[in-house]
Image (cartoon, rainbow, N blue to C red; front, side):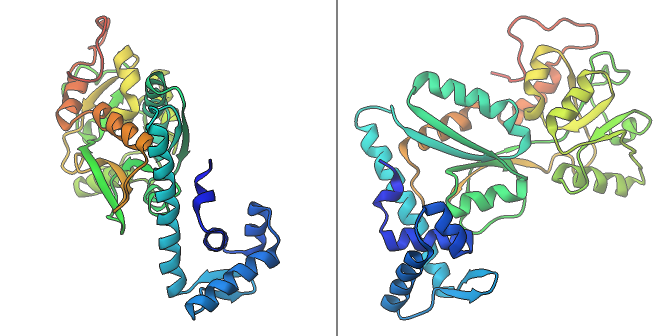
Length: 328
């Protein structure tokens, strides 16, 4: 049974129009005539005695009353999902869906591995994973479009609670034979004469790097700029130079010895966190609760980040069997 079928028809139609901002788009998504949608919304407005939308030539915008009702409708739909999950859990965790929004750094390796491990224990669970810019992850959580958000820290967001947080300092990622790979720690000044791969200026990690460089009068000139973490990782693995990123993004490559990681000791390079986010006041469906527990367990603690860099093989060293980027 689909959760939306537990939601009142008028509320379901209203919420679709609110999300799409258009009767026409909502009609197409629901496969319901626009006139039927309009009648249901008019009925709600009549019962409540107030307009729920401002009608404009280019679409429909929620009024203050409409915003309140939309929040109620979203939570009602989320409660329906949870109820169905609990009913399914009566016979074991054999059905349900886990919906995640994640930024790029986690989508390449960590999240797929967790999904596979989770499904080994719970075969009937399905996953929906959206890869979004960091700033959009809390928005997806707040709207109820996803159960769990996984991203790097930014400004606090209304109605979004951080259920797990850990430090995610910036690391220098290098080919094992790079001239700087033998150094236990690096500074941004060390990197100036070397080929660099960096994320674009609008990203949090690049802004941290640029501010630290500005304080010191340094000028980094990257030979590669990319908003795709895997591109930066492959740049390093192929011997292109050094990239600045997080341990989580490079964990599997560090474990295999394909690259090494070194802490960057400049002030401010340790201010970023990883956040696991959920909607404030919401009880997650059973499957999402179980996945959240696994996610929190598998993310390394702050002490593991330094250990991950320290245990990376030195130039010319063969990684020992079972050596990983995590300290246990």
